[in-house]
Amino acid sequence: MPTITAVQANHPHLRQLVAKLDLELLERYPPEEVFGIDLDDPSMDQVFFIIAYEDGQPAGCGAIRPLDGNCVELKRFFVERSFRRKGVAAALLYCLEEHAKERGFGLVKLETGTEQPESLYFYRKHGFYEIPRYGPYADCPTSLCFEKVI
Image 1 (cartoon, helix red, strand yellow):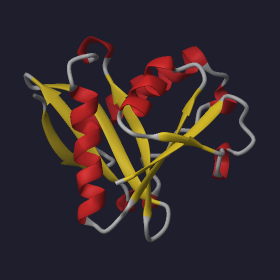
Image 2: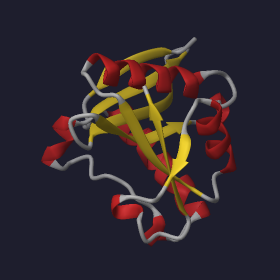
Image 3: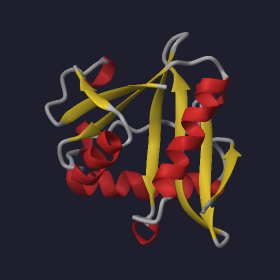
Image 4: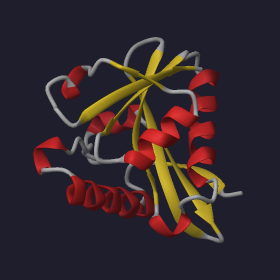
């Protein structure tokens, strides 16, 4: 079972993991279809970031940010290739959902893409259902959006 740690946007391990996520997404999508976040933006103080560690090594990360009074968005959800299929993603998701519930949120939304079949399987397996594309993803042909009541 991984150790989960809350971190700030400037944490070096978070930045390493997010950079790897962005590189992996750029292998699958054109740059205009990769919806990253600016970790240096002052609004990042509203985002709750976590890192999963396995044997002291950063294995994955994730975040939630409020969209409104009842809904958070799952962001920068990533597990290193060498740590996949070992329960790291499920542990990250559980931690983020619990954090959201503790703060009174009842819904989690997310965007993923058509070229990430492993993500589609994971989210469906964990109770997410597809919804119409929203916000910045509305006009992106490879975006798929999901939500889950928590």
